[in-house]
Length: 245
Image (tube, rainbow, N blue to C red; front, side, top):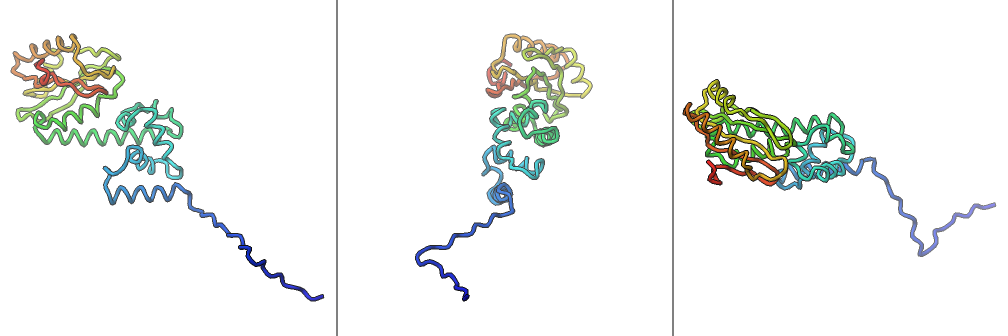
């Protein structure tokens, strides 16, 4: 029997073959995002995209966009993510101890870079750098913390030290301890800094009275208190700008 070759039916298109790429969809996204950052600068990236680029290095074989967006949804902002405690970070799906550690290291790199900038300048004339530093360090801190920026005769930063660490609404502060430390560091002036975990940077009556007690303790030593800054999620309040010093 003669074999008959079947001819294709006229007017019927042969089915199209679809080839599935072995390259994961997120790999191309990473490449595009890196190119965007390099060519247009980091400022061109949204907050979740910046967070993604950090997570690329920490989570090498997974789509990290959902993790990035989950972090921002959980904490509310990029600065809050970087300020969050490791114990809270690892509650987000996809974030383990390693990622939490790397995020905290990234935050500390930024803080130290700002601190270096302050140390090389006259602090009281670098207002934007100072407020950025204070906000970065304290606006998302869950407990009230009292810090002192000790300055030399040129108003450059000698040290930033925690002088009181307390509860959500109180940090014990001892003017004599601040005076003693200022003498040890040979500081000529200082700036007081603390946070309000409530989110409202408005000075309380206790804040005002405590500031006056510190000023009185330092007057006899001829050490000047330039300002007292209160940091909170609602911003930074300056006692000097408010006429309280």
